[in-house]
Length: 405
Image (cartoon, rainbow, N blue to C red; front, side, top):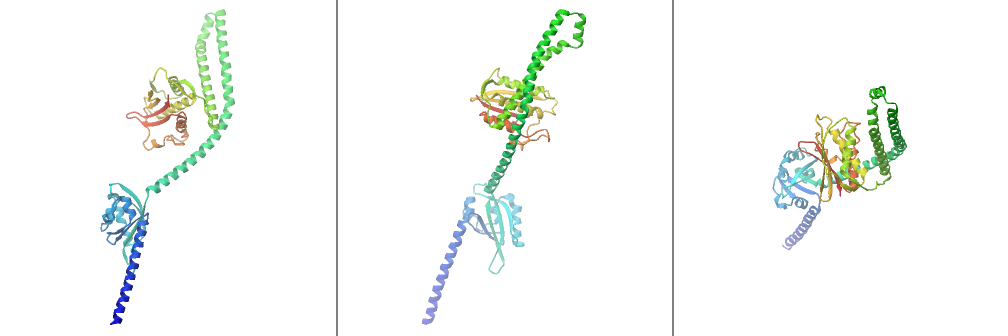
């Protein structure tokens, strides 16, 4: 009897030890599940959820009881039904698959999860369910997008550095011939004035019907009348080219053009005149401008931005039978806004976010470098302003240059 009692006591002690070990194992498993940052779901062969961890509770805002004994499909959004059905392959073929599903949260929002699904076996090696382990892909995607953006910026920086070296060389090479053109045109202007005076004297001294008829035949009066404005226009163009060369040299050397007081209205008119006069497209131009608007800024940079915007507008209206250009200038909250609006096809919605990125262009190869708007945007930022783009209903694109007053 005593031996039986001793066996019972010994069995009780062993049972308590095993129960203690089992409890410790249970606590250990629970602590591991709670410490996991990845989401975990365990379900049976019917797809009924048997276990979830704290990560899923934190992600969804739902308690564990909301998942237990529920079908696996209830965890995910309705549009993932077909993908959830694919998970059954884990049980049928005993496969391990990776899949992305959207988890439904307590506030009815969804969070994408990258899940790894694998079969779960008992001690006899039979499939008794499956285990799903996943991680939110939002952070991974953001990190990837940031890495991709940084990579693009590095590529662009290297391209711009190479461009800067090229610009420095081009500016140096252009400087001398432009100086010759500029100087020679001044001399030609003086010569033209003297020739005009000489011909006037000749007519006064030896005028007659034959001389008058000869002048009419060769249109001498018209030539003399056109000579001065042609020379002035050429001088103005040479002067602008010289300014561009100086801008290129400043750009490559990191220098800035000094600020000065300008009449913005006159600058807008001159920019339009420059571009339209040299273009095959002759649009109807409407102005909504103040008579005069003085601004303390860097004239060359403002002129460069406006010329670029107007040129792009003309390019966009190349297929229009009646191209129309609208220049508007308004003052708002201590700032001046100059808008350039065309009646072209507008900008595609998927292109708008990239319109000011370097080397982005939707023009045919050889007709655009993708740098004009990028440089214009940078110049606007340097001036303490901004450059934006939008589409106008029943019209085309509208670019707005904002400058501080």
